[in-house]
Length: 382
Ligand SMILES: Cc1cc2nc3c(=O)[nH]c(=O)nc-3n(C[C@H](O)[C@H](O)[C@H](O)COP(=O)(O)OP(=O)(O)OC[C@H]3O[C@@H](n4cnc5c(N)ncnc54)[C@H](O)[C@@H]3O)c2cc1C
Image 1 (cartoon, rainbow, N blue to C red):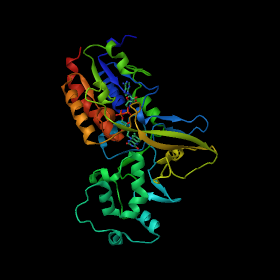
Image 2 (cartoon, helix red, strand yellow):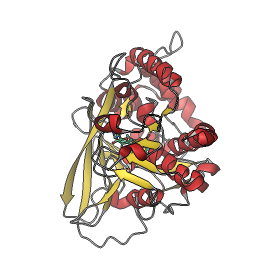
Image 3 (cartoon, rainbow, N blue to C red):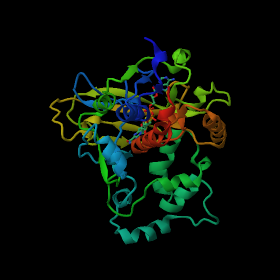
Image 4 (spheres, rainbow, N blue to C red):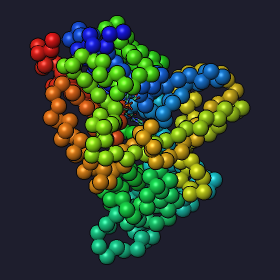
């Protein structure tokens, strides 16, 4: 196959690469070479059907689509419908199940009381040791808001297991991102549009990439074919930014996850898609039961599948979450400066931008790259 005939090369078939590929073919009528090193398209959103039970699962962790962004919602609905699934997370602590984010039900159940919303602040204030100065780290901030008991039960060890870092070393500002509710609202997201693709993420990606002008090369690492590409091809690269520059400023560090599947001979194992396990003694951080993601499907099997999720430092093979430290940020800034100098190369996505993006944010980023970066150049492409 002659790779040098393509003026557009996309690296990575996750949402970033697939949306840009769809836009270029449908709006500009151009041919695309899409290079993917895994044996499937879809990046980390990929879903697959378990052969024994027929249950669809998300191979790289439970993915719930949620957005308030109409432009993104209208765009993605061209390729899939979404079911009515609404995400709710539970947490197991000392063999009891609680609601997450921490809400009035969590507090009442934890302390075995029946507070009303307007009584929560006074109740928590009585449990707190007054701080002499403003909280200077994640732990101090958490305790200043929810008190020591709830923090230690649901957040401290969970954070340590997930990030392998002492929460005292995390900035106080991170706690502001964790929702805390003084009412009984149990929905994890409040976005206007939510759900899981009715026919699964794999089908959605196949539709996104269905145009015959898109050639997908699976099991292929971009770096092994880079020298066969057209010299002035426009490259949209959604792999790790440090690798693109051959780690010239040092390696960025990442956390990764591994998922251990079990098939269990009961119809329903835990009654919910995701349950957190915050206790130190339990090695995994969550159990996923994907059957619950499709309430509209009639899974008739008497069996279910579950996935225990473990968090660990990445060895460079499977980066999931960027580790936000000053050192990593400084390295990323150097790479970004290099990337901004390049003509004809767009580096983006969760690996390219070294940033956690939800799916709707990734789609918006891809639409922006197409509209403001690629489409205006079309007259100049040979
Ligand atoms: C555990 C987890 C759970 C999540 N849950 C949610 C959720 O519930 N809701 C939500 O909105 N978002 C969720 N997200 C975020 C979502 O996964 C991302 O927004 C999305 O996957 C980003 O797409 P991307 O294209 O940037 O990256 P990716 O999906 O990672 O795609 C990048 C692709 O590039 C390929 N690649 C990399 N390097 C090369 C190379 N050298 N050559 C060829 N191919 C290469 C990779 O194999 C990969 O397929 C979650 C993320 C994680 C990690």
